[in-house]
Every structure is written in structure tokens, then in C-alpha cells.
Length: 182
Picture 1 (cartoon, rainbow, N blue to C red):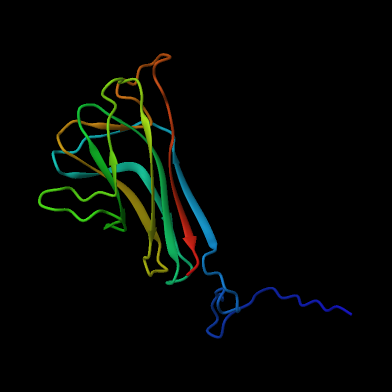
Picture 2: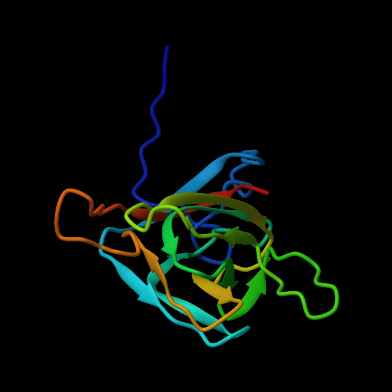
């Protein structure tokens, strides 16, 4: 003989929505939610020497369900620049995350962004991955920033030349956030 329990809503003792652990479920290491931003338009960025600049439209927001959750930040960035090198990093709600430890006047970045000196009709794709531990259940916005070593600009989703013919390339970049159960 089987039984069926049907309810409209389950609440915890304080009247809120129960978490997986409230229900006795172990979600450690499981992907609880995924958010992705896809940028398909060309974006240009110019930052003064050694100064960071945010990249317009390159952000994603996620709200963790538990303070023990981690956020896996993954990005695939189509990039080009001429005559300069850049570094990329993310800020979570304005706080820099996942960067190297600088010595002297080095720039603290999460990943290098180079240029292709031999062909200004090409671009390259850079991947980045960082597991963040925000200890928060508030909305978290992860924003891409770039830093460079001189005043020349850089480009996302296009080549330096950005020709309007068959040598021009139009690509996409993605930012993916995954909540991982803690």
C-alpha cells in the first residue's frame, strides 16, 4: 500500500522557505543555480596607464541561497588590443576577487589579456575560472574590470581593425556564475 502527501507550501519554524539542509538534504558540491550573461556586441575600453576600468555590460548577478555556498565564476572573453597588454579581474559588489599578489609596482590581475601583433584582423578568447566564497545570501554582482600598461584601448568581441568585410570578426563573450552548495 502506498501513501501520497500533498501540500501547497512547506515552511520552516520561522515561516520562511526551508533550505535543503532544513529538509535533511546534503547538497554539498552540487550546482544549485546557474546565471549567465552573454555579450554579443562589440565593446571598446580605454584606461589610463595603470588605471583600472570597468567593462560596460560585462557583469552577472546571482543571489546565493546559503552563506555556506560558493560561487564559481567562469568567463570566456573574446579580446583584442594593439600595442599594449591588459590584465583582467572581477569585482564582487565592488570588492576585487581572485587576483595575484603583486610585488613592487606590479598590477594585481586575475588573468592576462594580450594582443596579437601580427594580425589586427584577429582576436583571441581568454578563459578564467575562480571559486569565490562570499558568505552571503544577498545579491552579488560580478563585474569585469581591465588594467593596462599604457593608454591604448582594447576591444571585446571584435578585432582591432573591426573591418566591415570578410576580414572582420564578430564574436561573443560569456560570464557564467554557478552557486555550489557548501
